[in-house]
Image 1: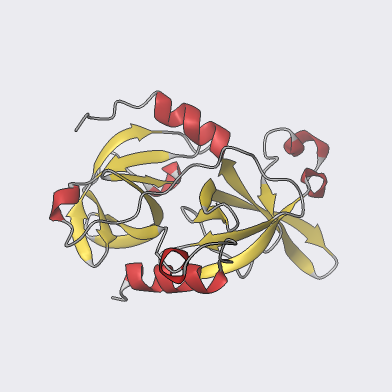
Image 2 (image 1 turned 90 degrees about the vertical axis):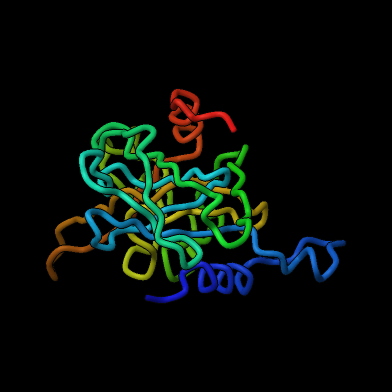
Length: 215
């Protein structure tokens, strides 16, 4: 098993530009922690550690009836499903772990306040890798899909899969959670054209309705 936290931190720090006026120590401080799901003991997809023991991922990766857990900062922790979405509606799941079981405090991820625009750069981070991409225009999809799946990235083969976090590298905040990819027919066979991520606006409303235990 790879040291997931260290790899995620290293990748983010290499890709993220330092803000003007920051001192070296602040610029190099880790700002995101990624996790890997486990289900009945088997490893699964990626998840984003939000802080305060909260972990966010795609709903279709989680089975509330299973023995769910996460691997976070090298620790294998049992996880409680606080709120479960539906793949065809809001593909999100919010879990909680006992943060006191972590060897050290991890950074809390901030939710972005401004949605992205086509062409904006993003970093997509899964349990082991961070990859640059950019926001795609909804026009890539057929007209009946554009309204429902308007938040897309263009790089399909080289970016993280379901549950990966989509981050704004400039403001160091979470833009969304990777959900699915879209494929079209071409003369050379099926062609992947875009990946959809659940946007931050839906994440905010989803979490507002969750019953999050108070510390």
